[in-house]
Length: 275
Ligand code: SF4
Ligand code: SF4
Image (tube, rainbow, N blue to C red; front, side):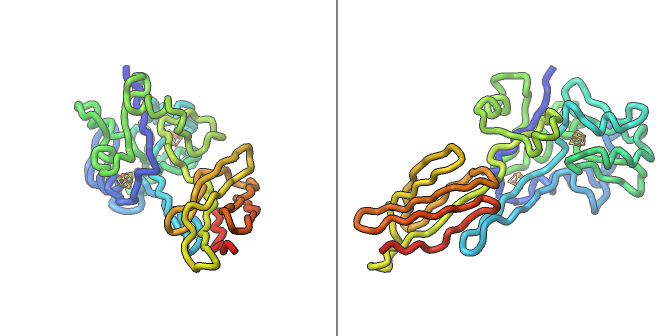
């Protein structure tokens, strides 16, 4: 029996909202008993895109993180439900039974990822089902995965070592949003936003972008050297938060410079003028 999971590659997500719209298209106004009842037209985000602005002008990026039910193996929503109203299928998909869950508002509060929504009109909690009704009808993937134009959403069998998702996980580049919850989530991520340190180097005597300058980052057990690009820009991405790093800037014929940066937030060191 397959065990389904999704690997979200954040480095590919461009925030187009196709996944969100496909989810709305599939579920708004459509009942799929016993999997789910219709999603209301407003107020629910079974697939939600979290947008986080990073850095400060002129070095600004937006990180898009698609957030959906993590189909946890140790799911608190199952423990919080009465009469087996939330259950895990043999393929790992966690389903809220729309009949048994009537009136059970405590299920909404049980999810630490906050991905369960209360349907006021129908008096039930609701969430992403991985489109279980479609998978059972022979579909190979949920609607959101099918419409993603960027290849950011990858669906497959976690038990099959040859599946795309298993191979991504085997690459050791994946992680879950909240490992501290210890829920054994079946949705994991590549490229979860961490911290960056960036800057721009200029040759002061020529007033030109300083290309090919050696920039060495040291700290938190890391030491690496990169070169500035033809705009004089450099960036170290994927650094841990709340750490201290030294950034050394060296180019023959110019005085070296060193900066200390703390990654409480993303850091842009600004324009650094070599003299
Ligand atoms: S993410 Fe929330 S709703 Fe989904 S299985 Fe885990 S606890 Fe339940
Ligand atoms: S469809 Fe794909 S690229 Fe577009 S927002 Fe969703 S995950 Fe990101």
